[in-house]
Image 1 (tube, rainbow, N blue to C red):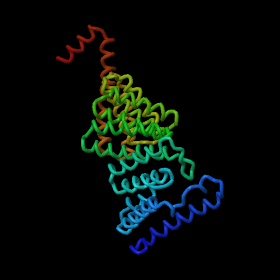
Image 2: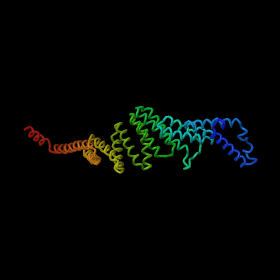
Image 3: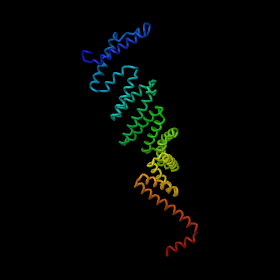
Image 4: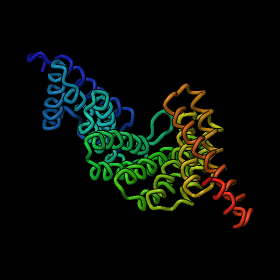
Length: 333
């Protein structure tokens, strides 16, 4: 190794031999390790170590991170191999190589199964692997949705949800369930969307996560609207308005108020519609959103006209047929 210029590899091999001998001496005669052959007496193992150490040194010189990391794979019962895959997954992810990152994180996850490995904070390697896969699968699904690959995106988001459930982090699980539900909503399957969104709602409610509750309410309202279920649509929109007001999410609140106003008008609840449109007007004025401001003004006018028409009609009915005929005669003249 030295004659071929692999000084670092030789140094590491020499250190390994020294450590093994020191462990043997410390254990003393009668111990299990005392009766084992030393590395110097096992030429096959020495050749194998030489091969991997020199290969890693060559790769390190060439700047190839995978090969440089590979030497760690040979030791520690697979723990360092798992760490290597985790690190490679992070590097691939940072460089936007999501498919490659997923492969490394999948290998990382596989190696953690049945293991009790933990990092210095006490968090298990398995939980880390699951969270990494949840994140990568979600990013991959986002790319698929951008490319209109809805079916594949949903399959990938379901995989992300399954990983999220294994992390032990309820917030991540709630977010993953929401993403699956939202994807089904977009693909025209509100029934399945509702199943996942209700899971998400339950988790976010338990956590007291107002942001999570708000966006899930919006998604559920959309799903029920697709089914023609106006009662449930209004229920979740009203719940969203209550959450958005306390969270000061003005843009989302504006959208919800406009939707509630329109539904109220369609159902003949003009006073209620007027209240929501007036609220939308105030919000759009605060946001300085001229387009929404003008839209709210138009709807306020429509609601007010409906209210006046209702009042006018009630007065006409109360006047009786004779008075109505007299009014029509007067109008004709």
